[in-house]
Amino acid sequence: MKKSIGIDVKKPKKKCEDARCPFHGTLSVRGRIFVGVVKSAKAQKSAVVAWERQFYLKKYERYEKRLSKVQVHVPGCIEVNDKDTVKIAECRPLSKTKRFVVVENESN
Ligand SMILES: [Zn+2]
Image (spheres, protein in one colour):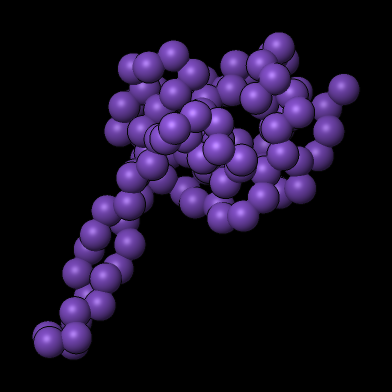
């Protein structure tokens, strides 16, 4: 059964057996949501997602661009490739570095 994950995203068409999937498993998402670009999708069920943020420089009274980068979990029902735009949501720590999960691939 497809359940709502509490945020407004397109539900994946595929089904999966991944327990760490917010749609078909038991993983719940809460906290922050970001939209970023996939930098690397080489590892199985993992990807690196980065997005730009503005950092204020007091001395120059201007903003500079800085990059936020996180490791994310890719559930079995969502496919990601390099340079895809994805929506990620914060979840419980899944491994040493993964605290986010992909909830939607906006490039597909
Ligand atoms: Zn799934």
